[in-house]
Length: 139
Image 1 (cartoon, rainbow, N blue to C red):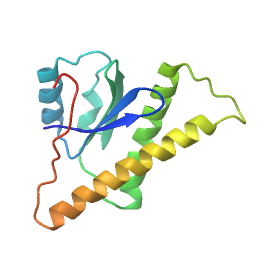
Image 2: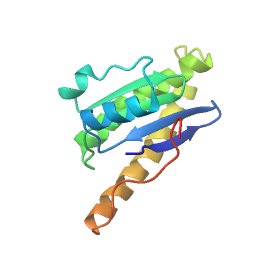
Image 3: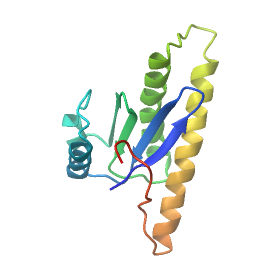
């Protein structure tokens, strides 16, 4: 399994989106890539998705995505975590009335991820593969 990688500019950061992805697939990929820092998949059994940050970037693991209000809300929830991770590690401090960095970054990531996930849905509907080969850490 290879994730979809999004480069987060101007922060020189990355977002890796795994969807669809089971807990076993996530654990196997992380073990193969020897990524252990800040990794906690314990809640992935009972949650729709999890997000964590390492020196390699943000990782979002989602069991599935459906293009419904609920599916979009799960994605946006996880992207909020990723947005704050990126900004904290970039040294950006948010204050009331000055949230534009957060808003623009979240907006950008939501747009890219939904476009990618809708493309996967279209491929599946047409009988194609839903897994894209992408560059990943340690590849």
